[in-house]
Length: 402
Image 1 (cartoon, rainbow, N blue to C red):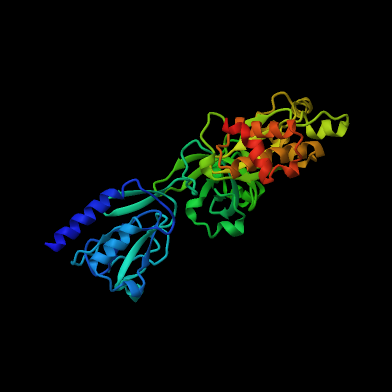
Image 2 (image 1 turned 90 degrees about the horizontal axis):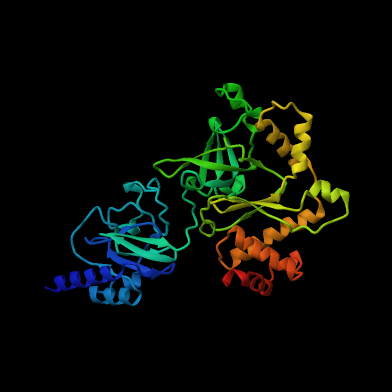
């Protein structure tokens, strides 16, 4: 009869756990490893052994402790291999990232996991989701980007080989990206890029050997998600003339949740550069406009707008029947090799700090919000170097909270 009361109490506690907000380190459930009724570990959780001094508590004390911490316990007395108890092959203090390749062999399982009670603890801040015995924590602000077909990506090349490039979705350097996990990398196949001059033909072994002439490790690029595989890996492409290698600009990384999906992720902020009488500024800085590429993976690229005079000059020097891809490649080469004027550098830095201000207050990053902060800094005469001071961040972002 006492077992019935315990099971009833556990059922009520399980029902009350739905959609509760939890913090990292909060206990979600407790289970004896030698008993039936344990809970399965889901995303955003990890398993921890209960200290020895609390292992001798009876069932009532265990239920009382877990209720105070917002958790619950399972204490029925039969063996079960499917629970996260005796035969569950999971490591202590290891976050669940959705991969099942980290399971230990049964013979190599630590002896400490075979005896004593275990606790299921939240590893992220979010809401609890329970499906039968599976308990997961859905983070409020996802830190790992999960792509969809058609998404714009601002990434970094971290590997070349096997007729494809590896693209870091976190824009991390090649040395740091190796430890971030495959879920943060996309694959850019050789068939998904434009060949020099816009030539359309089947890729050959010579193209494979010349892959580093297109992109090499450390290069930044814009690309688009072409396919999402069943395991979550992303297949990318740069076949559109808008995509390609990025040069002569600045990269800002923000949480992916701050960049929403829009109809156009290539935006231009006009008129941030003051007029100058210096002919060099007009030639190198163009019209003073700044281009912003909003990557849905959290990478934001900022560069000067390519002046229309450059395109007119290139078209005047080449054949009228020349393909558009060849013209755009010459424009990108001139952009990469032409010095950025001091006034344009200040405008780029101002837009960059505007994005940082929005990130610091966790505000949605849109073309309108970026322009509001940048215009406010110009109108109030705030130096670029002072924009990230705490009092200035609050002052500049006031327009985004109206």
